Length: 339
Image (tube, rainbow, N blue to C red):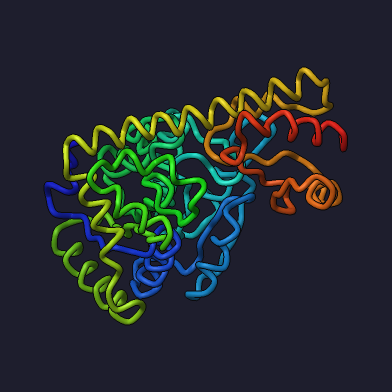
């Protein structure tokens, strides 16, 4: 996509240590500037690292209820945005909300963006799953592009390539992605073992002059924080994005991975429905991305861990990506037993 912000040199960016490093860098950068309020808003529930990431650099972190039984709690989100001070930071999940799996529709994103602009708030996108939500990278980046191109908002974007390019550091879950990188195969095998995390921290500014200042500050922060980001993973990402053939292959692989996750959601829903397991399981097919919250109590989470070796967070945040044809029925039967 042709970006006006990039064409006008209004984007400042730096390489970061995957999504966590990008968010940490964004937090440090925003604390350094005088334009932003030192209050950050995160969703509840949210990725467990969000709160401590922003508190560690000095932000006062507040939460707003994000998920309802049938989707995004827009009323709670709008109330938080209305009550927030101007230039407060809102950490938004670009796609595949972690852990709820509920994403705003394009229409809802437009309403969120309009209120952000009206209230002079600062959106900071956490984009860890682009391409793994709808199986289309462009579609998953809709909110980012709409805010930047249509609303012309100042904003931050933190992108991780760890999962979308198979650089998460887990041998078992990433081996099936290796073949797609063709002549990079031998490098990728080493990459998987090392867990090279590659991310991007970017800011869209009002003009080129501001972007230049932001990029200078990012360079200083990187120098103090990690000195130089690792080149190996970045080289893989740059090669795939810069080569037409590899880029097309990568897009097809994203479709394969996304479709598999969607398929496992449908399978788990089907198994639980066939067993007659109490609960609202239709949400499994309505939500998106790698995670969902099963709605189990902490005692039940502990029980299935101890006696059935099914692992999830205490909140019952569960990885759909961990399901496969060999274990999905077993997982459903164990959930059925404790319900």
